[in-house]
Image 1 (cartoon, one colour):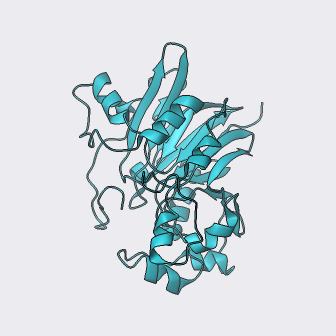
Image 2 (cartoon, one colour):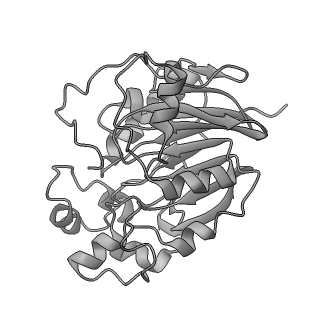
Image 3 (cartoon, helix red, strand yellow):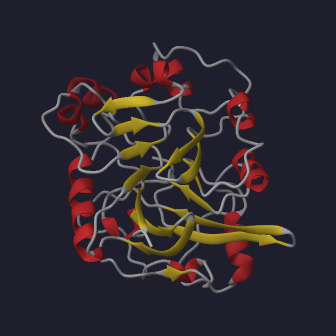
Length: 303
């Protein structure tokens, strides 16, 4: 039997490529094997030129680390695929709406679609919901306003995905609406504080309900979350929301697949298993809760 496929997902990187590579090294050491595939759920900030990164991300103090990969000074160790969030180098991504490689083994999946990665069917939707712009055409991002609008998904992009079925993984940036209520219904006394009921958007929720992927991975809100959507006649969609890449415990999430079925998953870089096939996936599947500490990188939701 072939060795299980090890997939590592990473929350909003915001330009911190070096630390993510170090975390993935630690995960490989802990699991005793190579990470086959890395998936990032948006707000990667793969700015090609350092000056661009410092200008457009001035509200953060993140180093412009991707420039080293784009210039060939460094190379990622594992195939890295990402979707767009609402903070990206949209000028560079505009001409890659169907996806493309930004540096060796660093691939932007595109604004919306489906791709087979290492035998897995992966669907993806970049951006967040902005009702005012969802029906407007996507303009080339040349001004402050059009750059911001490039971080919003459009109806045509959502519709491109609604007919998909038998999806192993779906990547979105913004959470689907209603999953906090679902978690509260399952456990009136959850093991950690829950975010606002109104987090997420209804468009992504309708999309997830239509596609019913086996796993959904989200970013944007800078907190870890776990819940399952299921019901009569509806197969389970297990949702893992990832924290930003300030520390690895809740911003790195890994899955081991046998064939196209996830058989075990875990958080962080310790290699400890948080869930195995047949177990319930909910808030109790998260690591022990600790507030963001140490590096002062806690940030508001949707940063």
